Length: 405
Image (cartoon, rainbow, N blue to C red; front, side):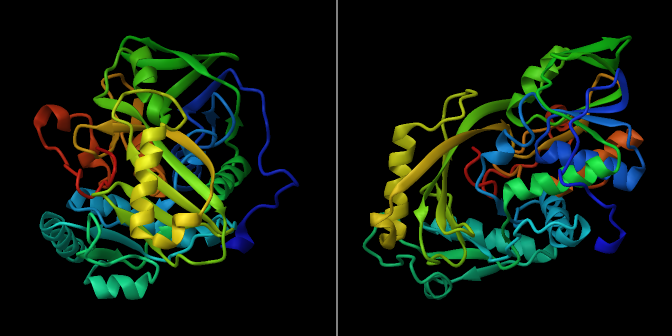
């Protein structure tokens, strides 16, 4: 595949002025927007596309996440979407001709109570029925896989076992964005940074274009992919989407020699930890309970996160915190995404991924591009429509969606 790719100049993508009109305008230059534009061009031959990013490319949630990739979700619809994503992740380094450090080091989800154990085993069995690699590990097996983990009985939340997905892992988020951007640009997509959308224009129930800080841009189709700010954008078109936006915090430590061989998550104590390729420990926590758009951390969440991490990993007690940050997660009532047509003709919405946005990047772009190109959902995202909140066909992933609740 790499031999078939076009030659690239020294820069990864161009910096064009926006044209007056495009066939498709994608609002949001993060992972999902970039993947959508890439698959529009690659799979559907639609290259008259503009990606509009109000700041810099991939400077929102794409740069503010903990890069975990997994597909061990409970329900059939979620497992299909995230497993498709994982299979695309496995082929994308060669397809995009870019090493974005995809490391399939496995992901463990710890169980600390009998309720956790029952729910975890249920999820493992459901995963196995759906062809997703999943195992149940006893505490001794957890310790064997991650020797630095404390499995003793005299801690607040003893480790009673864990689910394990061997094919899961992490990737370098910036490199993922650059890889998609380079190929989308090479196929003719315009990537326009510093171009905030300030209005969505409709006529006769159909979208016709967007108002931006750089002037009006006409569009045959408009696709929203702006993570935590989707409700603000949808409101410009007179649409209410059932999401709430919350800050979600993460942090990294100073650099260390490799000590943490896998990814460990604990829904119960709301901490998850991996070690990045350079050596820093990357840690996430639960969402702040209030609604907001702040891209920063709250001290009490950091304090609770550190206490949980040190209890599970005593070796981290002397690790120094390097920096913290916050992303903006948009959470639906059932902790599952919305990838859907809207009541406005030719206006589409991709939102509500909670903490699953990064891992879902390729599957989201793949199915969203199909929906935009054909004005009909792909089988992968058919169940993730806005209509489910009226019909009651919800996909409740609060257990498998970790901290996004």
